Amino acid sequence: MTETEHNVSLRHDWGTQEVAALFTLPFSDLIHRAQAAHRAHFDANAIQLSTLLSIKTGACPEDCAYCPQSVRFDTGLEREALLPLEQVRDAARRARAAGATRFCMGAAWRSPRDRDLDRVIEMVQAVRDQGLETCVTLGMLESEQARKLKDAGLDYYNHNLDTSPDYYKEVVTTRSYEDRLDTLGHVRDAGIKVCCGGIVGMGESPLDRAELLRQLANLPQHPHSVPINNLVQVEGTPLHGLDPIDPLDFVRTIAVAKIMMPASYVRLSAGREAMSEAVQTLCFLAGANSIFYGDQLLTTTNPAHLEDLALLDKLGMHPEASPKYSDIDSAAAPRPDTAPRAARTQARANAG
Ligand code: SAM
Ligand code: DTB
Ligand code: SF4
Image 1 (cartoon, rainbow, N blue to C red):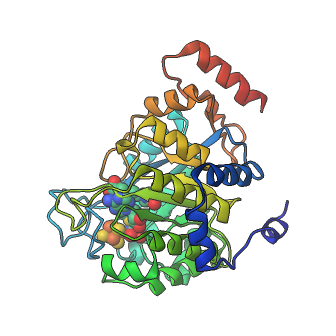
Image 2 (tube, helix red, strand yellow):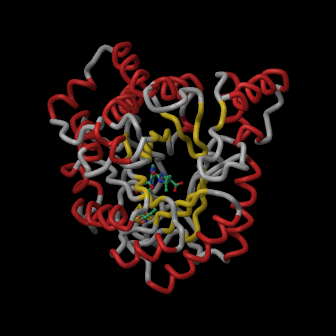
């Protein structure tokens, strides 16, 4: 299917009430609809693996209330300058050896300076050379910067809307929702695939969650990848100490995202460490088909990668093979210590 044909069946005219109504469906009906939407577009047993690396850490001038990297909050985080190229290359090599197919580099900037962008472009090229898809998240971009990244071969740009327009003002004051939408427009116009999602568990209302998803689905194109983060509460940030979201409301958010954007990868993103295997499994049932994979997110921890492989194995699921580099078979990644089941999973993955 071409991109245009593909988009014909996708809706961009969601109304507030109908999205809110999806959230209130009986749980079983909601999951059934999300599974059906998911299976129309994807192998329901394959999970895409993306590994994160913070290439520039801390001392960010923005005031995002959820973020441990803002210079305004005392979170005890040590700032780090832009990493040397060799260190990025090594991390990418390790990620690929562990079975990731995409490598996402994050920088704690409001927006990149041109000389920083040139160094990031070298990193993108080094990561591509390792046979990985590339993603960066560098803050706000001008259109010319987006074009330079496209020319360097960047596959994805991550820039989240984070929450509803109304609630955004409560969480971030140093930039606006419009700023975020402008950057997304530059990325899209440059022909880079968009990775855009948000965070739940920030004290937002159920309507804010519905509105975030409505904003995402009503963009001119659905983001190729939709990360749904569960707030990682870090001491020293203003959002530390909030009541966490009910896990079933988190699952509902994943399911509604999949129903509204069925052809997009919905990523079960930050916050998995605080989730049981059962809740993560419900997220997969609800149509999540991507995870951050590796022991570290940007500045906080993530489940150990062998634990993730063991969970997929237990569920009869498998890592998605690289869509771009056909020589890479993620299912050949190091397996957890469950050889007979692992062998079955791999045989199934290879057959599909
Ligand atoms: N500085 C750039 C920006 O904000 O666009 C890129 C890096 S920023 C850390 C990338 C995304 O990480 C944010 O948009 C937010 O959605 C997510 N994030 C940051 N802190 C988080 C936290 N404590 N829990 C969950 N997600 C978080
Ligand atoms: C996204 O949506 N989540 C990632 C990635 N995009 C850049 C970041 C999660 C950060 C969690 C807190 C931390 O580790 O600093
Ligand atoms: Fe800076 Fe990004 Fe963190 Fe906001 S989310 S404080 S822009 S690193």
